[in-house]
Image 1 (cartoon, one colour):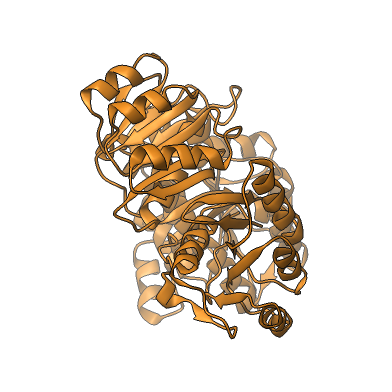
Image 2: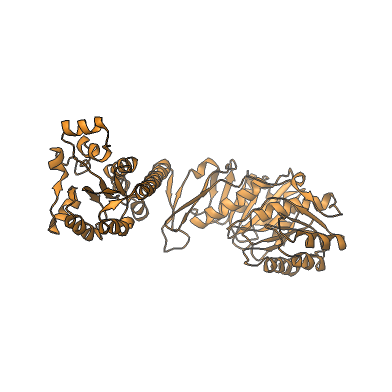
Length: 495
C-alpha cells in the first residue's frame, strides 16, 4: 500500500471538491493548486500552496500556461530510483503522489457554441498533460482524471489515504481512456472544421444542426431549397443502396424516412420509374428519388406529376431540367460520384460508437442453397435484389421482390412475423400478385412460422442468413412444399 502525502489539484468542475480538500487537510496532505482552483479552495479556508510559488514562475498568457514546469512534472513523474532521488534533491522537486484534474469542457463547448475561438480556448493543455504524466507513473502516483471519480477518491482518503497498485493501475487505464477520448473529440472537430455547414435546423425545428463534410465533392445542386439534416440522411440511405445494386439497366429508387419504398430495375428509365412508384405510391409522396441513368424529358414529365423532395441522377437532358425546375423548392442533385463507405459514428450514452462501414454485399455465388430445389435464374436475381434491399432497410425487416421489382416491405418491426405480415399486407394493398415472388430477411428465422406464412401467400423462394438452432424446421417445410431456401451466412442488421 502506498500512502498519499501531497496532491496537485487543477479542476474545471469544482463541485464536490470542498469535501476532498477537507479530507486532504484532515490527513495532513499538502495541496498545490493554481488559478481559479486555488482561489476556490482558498475561500474554503483550506491551507494550500500556489504552483507559482513552487515553480517561481507566474501564470502567463492569460492563464493558459500555469502547471507546465519541470518542478511540477518532475514531482509527478518521480520514481524511487537513485537517479530520480538525486535530481529531486538537486533541483528541489517535491513529491506529488496525487493528481486531481477535471478538464475544460471541450465537447460541451462544441455542442453549445459556434464560436471557433471560444471552442479552441477550451482545448485543455496543462490538464491533459498532468493526467498523462500521473497515469504513466501509476506505480507511484494516483491519477483522478474526472469529477466523476471524486466519490472514489473520497473513499480512498477515508481509508487511511492509501492505495494498492491495482487501484492505481485501474485509474491509470481510465485516465488514458479519458485522454484518448478527449483528443479524439478535438481531432474530429479540427479535421472537419473546414467543411462545416450550418443547417436550417436538425432533425426537428427546435434542434440546431450542422453537417461536417464536403457535399460538393459528390453532388452538384442544380435547383431547390437549402438541403436539410433529414434530407442528408435520406440522400445517404438512397446512395448507399444505389451503390450496392449491380445492374447495367435502369435502376430507380424511392426512399422515405431512410427506408426504400420503391425499387425497380428495367430496360428503360421510364419503366423503372413507373414500376418503382407502383411499389408504394402513397409513401413516395415527399420522397427521395434516385437513379443511375440520365433523366430524359419523357421521364421528367412523368416524375413531375409527383410531389417529391429530392431527385438525384448522374445528369439531366436540357428539356428534362426545364420541366423539373418548374418547382423552385424541389431539390435537384447531379451525382458526380458515389461516395465511398467509411467509418460510421454515432453518439451513445455519454460517448460514441464507431464501426466499419458495412461494405459486404452478397451476390448469388455467395448464397448457399439448403433445399432440394434451387431457384431459377429469375428468382435468383430477385433473391439478390431482395437481399440487397434488406441490407438497407431498418431491422427487423422483410423484403419481397418479383421480376426485379420491390413489391412488399415490412420494416422497423420488433417481431419478424409482424414485419412479414406488414410486407404481405402492403404488397396486396398495392395490387401485386405474390405467386412466384421471392423474399429476403435481414436475420434468421428462429422458427418455421414465417416460412409457412410465406408459402400460404405464394412466395416460392427465400434467402436469409441462417444460423438458427431450428433451421432444419424451415428447410424441411420448404422441401415438403417445393420451395427454395438459400442461406447467406451474413447478417445485415440496421438499427
